[in-house]
Length: 126
Image 1 (cartoon, rainbow, N blue to C red):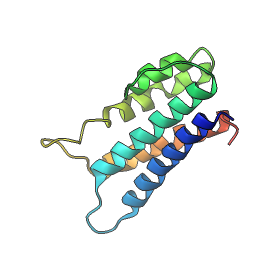
Image 2: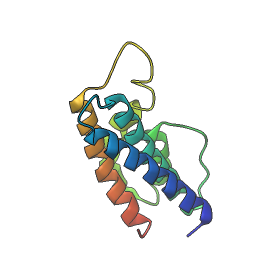
Image 3: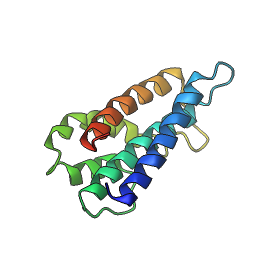
Image 4: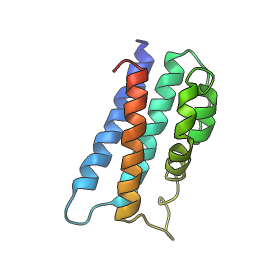
């Protein structure tokens, strides 16, 4: 496996574990952070897969853009479009005053993240 791919995976796993830990917090969980790190995990797995395929990608947090680049080599991932669109909104949605995630948002984002993570890891032979 390409060393840069492994770096993307390591960073994705860091986001995944951060989101999982924060979701499990009993007192004052930061649901905004759960949603953000779930999005980041998916983003980094998309970039890992692109990297491993030798495909160029720009600096974007839009998971749909990244997914569309991958569809020629991972056509089955098209079924994940709706989940990735939802996760994509969490790149910025709760980072500023005016709106905050709740337990439902956090649980939903982690469910979508776990599902995509499993698909991505399988594709990468992990």
